[in-house]
Length: 319
Image (cartoon, rainbow, N blue to C red; front, side, top):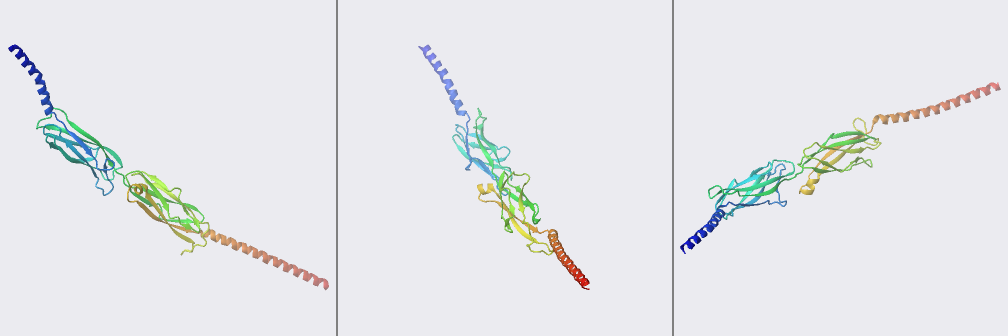
């Protein structure tokens, strides 16, 4: 009977030992949970980088300790080359949680783009001791460099003189000073000169890359054929001065921001009548008139001579 009880006790002890070991292992296991959200409608951490912008964005995170021991949890942030700020480590009691913020900073006037953002929480200590297992939790997000608009317009020649009867073009340069590809609309005030539309655009929009060379467009000028009715200037030349307003607008700013950005310039165009041609025409008219007068005078002289010849001939016969 004693032998039977001894065997029973040994079997019970051997079966109970693994249960105690497994339970103890579960109690000391490290664990961590992390969740993060960006407070922007896009779901990404948005970074405004236009001149004067704050250049920063952030994500709100919560880290929790589901284990049965106090943990020291390290926070690590990688943002594809962007500067970041977050708590280096957080201590959490068993079953506790803590909120923190991750701040991302970009450089001013960076090109529009998206960068990967990873936030990782890793258990470093469990009740002051190295954790018996690797425990970490990560959240992957995106950091978006937001687009902004900027533009400038340059005239190749602020004042242009164009001869009447000719076709010329005015050249302009469009600069994209934003941080992304933009479409610019072009318009003029459409001045009418002597009843005709003198200025015409070959197109009304132009696409320009950011940070690149300026895009060039031209306005065709069809001048009136005759300017002899124009006022005379101090040099005795017929001239007509016209101010042409040229405007460009950023399509991106007009569609996606509250400010429709535009730049306008006033181009001064001076039409003039070629005086040499006018004087030549007058000289030709004068020469033609003189020839006609000479023909008249010549014809009259010949008639008079003929009459005199007849008169003297008749007198001679009578005598």
